[in-house]
Length: 202
Image 1 (cartoon, helix red, strand yellow):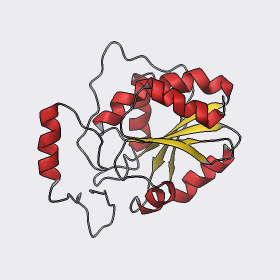
Image 2 (cartoon, rainbow, N blue to C red):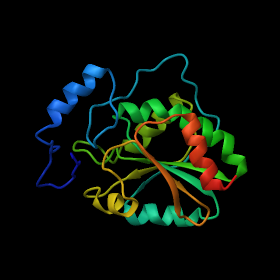
Image 3 (cartoon, helix red, strand yellow):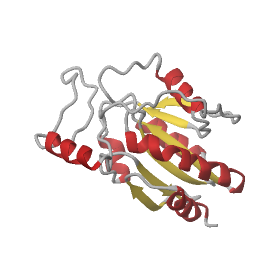
Image 4 (cartoon, rainbow, N blue to C red):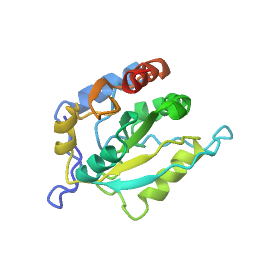
């Protein structure tokens, strides 16, 4: 399983020997089931349909401790924690439906928080990443907060949340911060709503 590393000793992405075989197979089907950290860029081109968000959203760079602190500060709300990246095609594809659920449940005690892995690849620029993601969200009308994960590797967050290493992945946390459901891989609005209902208890 390919993992992005920001270590100075390993400045390039590591790829499993069988990655090329899986890549060719996936593209022959016309889609990716999931993205490895450090995958191909999937930022879409601008279109007239992309509307700016009227909602104020926050963007923050955090390490593992910062992620945990943010979640602790938001205890008392049901939450969907969505792990994604701009270069991940399945992640980008599901974001509009995730945003629909965020809008529908915001006033009902439900919250969506995105955890971006866009700093976890070689060549990423911490000085510009917040503005890049801000533009990405605004052009697509996405209005949930995003935590940009910044660490040497994914081991802490993967171990704590039992993440598969591939994204997207969505975790439902109840008001006490306990994991009550999860979805690994791309999903849709109906499944996001099911996750949110479990998170909020509605």
